[in-house]
Image 1 (cartoon, rainbow, N blue to C red):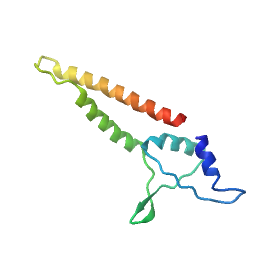
Image 2: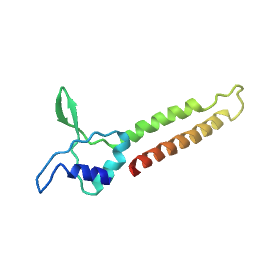
Image 3: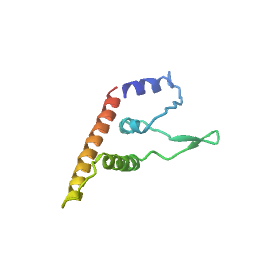
Image 4: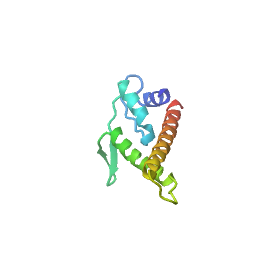
Length: 118
């Protein structure tokens, strides 16, 4: 956070105004939210047909839904398929899937936290 504020602060020196352009990915959304809480304002833009167009704020909840869906799919891929079907096999597979999904989610959250600390 300090690095971002320092670099952006260099665009407006001695009371002058300036514009800073930052490129970001989904992993940076936590940092952007923290900066917004500190009072920084962002204008989100995209490049379409070779010109800047104002864009909607990335809604973190929408990204989480997409990420959760991909976690769900990845977890199901990792659940071993039963060779012989026994009573309760679906429940057991669902429990395995939920456990794998939690592990993947925890791993993803750790990666995001480590990126913010840098």
